[in-house]
Amino acid sequence: MPVCWLNGSFVAEQDAHVSIFDRGLLFGDGVYEVAAVVNGRLLDADRHLVRLSRSLAAIGIPDTQPTAVWLDVMQQLATQNGVHEGLVYLQVTRGVAERDFPFPAQVVPTMFAYARPKLLLADPNAAGVRLLTVPDLRWQRCDIKSTSMLAQVLAKQSARAAGAFEAMMHEDGLVTEGGSSNVWIVRDGTLCTRPTSSDILAGITRDVVLEIAHEAGVPVRERAFTVTQALAADECLMSSATSFVLPVTRIDDHTIADGAPGPVTMRLRAAYLARATRLTQ
Ligand code: PMP
Image (cartoon, rainbow, N blue to C red; front, side):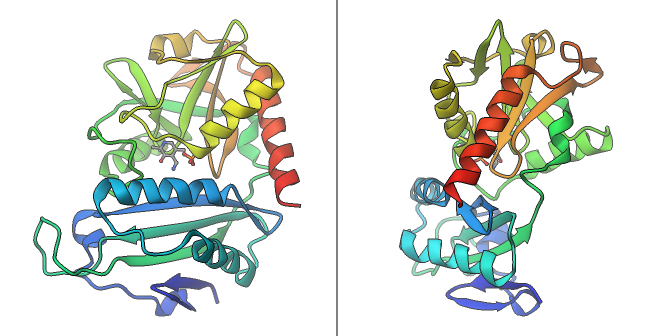
């Protein structure tokens, strides 16, 4: 029986309950993180927890749980649930209070986390995925990893309904990011992705890919690109904590280059996998 962690205790998932007055439920008033588990160990969880603290600060939820406690909870969830490869999800909401939009006085944040298995190293999507372009309908603080995600739910549902793996969101033709990933292109050997701002989430995987690219001598340009430029790119790829680096071989009904995963993409994926394996040994 899967075990989760809720407000300080490990409990069976089926016995974990939160109030209907939780502001996460009422308003999407909360933030979250997802970190990968490889070889039974957390990958880059410290970086995810730095971003959690930033998200909490951005929306004024007290950051009460020390990083060391979160790390222990996350690792215990992976271990207790026998998750050798997969993810740990964690969420913090503002807490339970009578429904009223402004922050309630004296509210205690709700915190929970759970683990799930997922194939990461041998992901069949490494053969190439298709993205569906959709308008980015979100708000102006996409840098906060908020649980208010109706726009992404709709974007990713459109992608799924069209048989695509992921949505590629754009503002008037300028690519922002994937529904739950960052998007990149390669042009003339240069890796290109949108610079971080309040328009996108600063992906932890994005940071790691930038580091790997620098180490591998792959030129990088942090610059926004258009949907048209993505369609004409030599390579397109996406990154996230639970997909690592995946080749994008089709966008809408258009095939990228010759339709095969590109060499720079596969080099970055291999380097990402090697790093993940090394750090979790
Ligand atoms: N952008 C969005 C909108 C996301 O939801 C995610 C995944 N949480 C990412 C980018 C990728 O971030 P990370 O590499 O930290 O998983």
